[in-house]
Length: 406
Image (cartoon, rainbow, N blue to C red; front, side, top):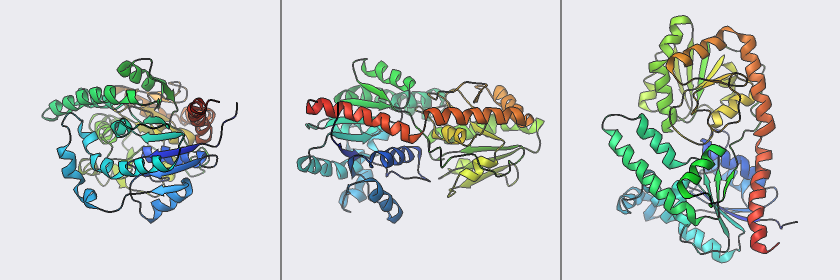
């Protein structure tokens, strides 16, 4: 069976970008960068600065972006006027929906696309009402109802009621709108199960996990800094914000009690005021944006992923594994990644256990190196973006060939 070169319409509220982008931007860039060599892909998304636009021209055959207009300035007020049954994370993007959907409808009238792909389940209602011969695919970077349920379970005080309300709204929202899609792309078998629990087993869900550029993220010859702990991530992402504060408040003091020379580097874009306040000018450093995270990962004696919430799979783990680093993560942090605890990653779900695991790696360089080497092996085998792009292509082709009668 052979299928034609595919025509794909890619719709997103975040611009594909690498290096330096968020997890969602990084995933989009790397998959599209591989797919664009073999298929015709058009873009509908936000306006871009010069660096972003250069990347868009690299990835896409045609770029369709909204003109600056009233809605761009009024997105916040527009969001407040839509149905209150939507979660806040959905309402936040409603102004962007009003900007982009006219472009989507115009593009579908001009082109016979095989696939229309939209990123993130909180955009699921955007394409739900569309009548089109193109097969509609939504990418579930996270299963939002699971993610918000975990936020709610970890919360306390005044925000607890608000998070519970959003969790229940997301559960209703995803159940209502995901069924309008021909296919769902999930990040892991675990997330696939979450989607089926929500929407039923008849909904087609395909697992295309997050990956890593194993040529870009590769072991460096730079010297490891003794007793240096590194955490990486986009710091305005709530699970990262919450996780590093948990580590500093519940775990780091126990490490310092046994290893007084330990240092912590918090590396990533957009640290909140609470995260910035963790920096003490001595043991804890908050870098903010860095142009290249690889030297920081390479310097670490231990990489930590102390996440308590979230879903999907974590690029930060795959990137550090690709660089041959030993990682201590919570079970939620490592969820969905094919790893063997004690062999290519260490897992810990209590402050006491997390402390022990970090100190264990600091004290035994041979064990740390062994864990890191085995981590790179599994990433190269299962998580290269090139291989994953072919898996995604197979999913697209299965829908296109059904559509064309091949």
